[in-house]
Amino acid sequence: MPQNKQILLDNRPQGEATASNFKLVTGDTPALQDGQVLVRHHYLSLDPYMRGRMNDAKSYAQPQPLGQVMQGGTVGEVVESKSPKYKAGDKVVGMGGWQEYSVVSAEQPGALRKVDTTHVPISHYLGAVGMPGVTAWYGLVKIIDAKAGQTVAVSAATGAVGSAFGALAKARGLRVVGIAGGADKCNYAVKEIGFDACIDYREHKDAGSLSKALKEAAPDGISGYFENVGGMVMDAVMTRMNAFSRIALCGMIAGYDGKPVPMSFPQLLLTNRMRLEGFIVSEHMEVWPDALSELGQLVGSGKFRPRESVAQGIESAPEAFLGLLKGKNFGKQLVKLT
Ligand code: NDP
Image (cartoon, rainbow, N blue to C red; front, side, top):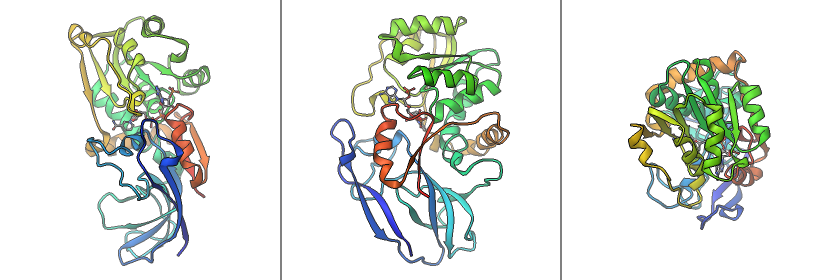
């Protein structure tokens, strides 16, 4: 059996996460038991939710245990199988974690899913045609539910979730305004994904200034907002929301290192009769088949070409992850392991 490099959570962050919270180890891969398969990971997914799991705090999911392999989504190839359900060469998506190989019990429901890489490159099953894509779909379709011609907005617009949101919203005939960090990201949002407008929030020192820019980008106001960030960006968007508008509260990355994320204008929820709803995509497995089918068609047909930031080798995972929490990624953040 092959040697396996793994990254463990060694200790919990105090404030900002740092590379010293992680530890690289090399171990033997255990021999396969009946019903198990050995998967060689091609890509590891890095996602903002991992920051929350590093804390020992009450949340919707259990904390990442200390001294164990960091949890995370992976795509790869079955290299050995003692299960009739899988054979060597099958391409699979699973939760293999921050390591080069995983031994998976094929009988465990949802542990592995075969994927077809004929029209969709395997890495996209961790991004646009995977969990982040379904997240965008859920917020857009099930919470925002805007009518064609209405304006919707999204923060972290060029990231894994935000870019899928933009592509889905355009395909459904909506006007889409993105908010992202930097001119390059905004150019990409408009020219490559098809956003109608994109605002670089770093050019605005406060919510008032960002709100003015939003008024130009969304002259009819905003009917639905997909929130990934929180803080000043959310304050500004809230001042431009229409009566009876909806906010899909997906993430608040501005507060993941433990800083408070105050909301300056909660009274607008009342005066605009708005609906704000938080959600966790893994609690809505019933929508995944429909969502993945729509996303797979968008990507497979070439209408949406998701961008990726790819770090090389398992050793690079901690730095790439810390970069994601600071906006250094441009598109879906992955680690290539082969
Ligand atoms: P992204 O690919 O969008 O990467 C994160 C982006 O967030 C960065 O590129 C950066 O974009 C922005 N960002 C990072 N730090 C900050 C900060 N301190 N303040 C403001 N912006 C920051 O990640 P994902 O697409 O994977 O995830 C987007 C959001 O969706 C996250 O909040 C995540 O937690 C949430 N999520 C929620 C799920 C759910 O079920 N509710 C499921 C999946 C994701 P920029 O440079 O443009 O600022």
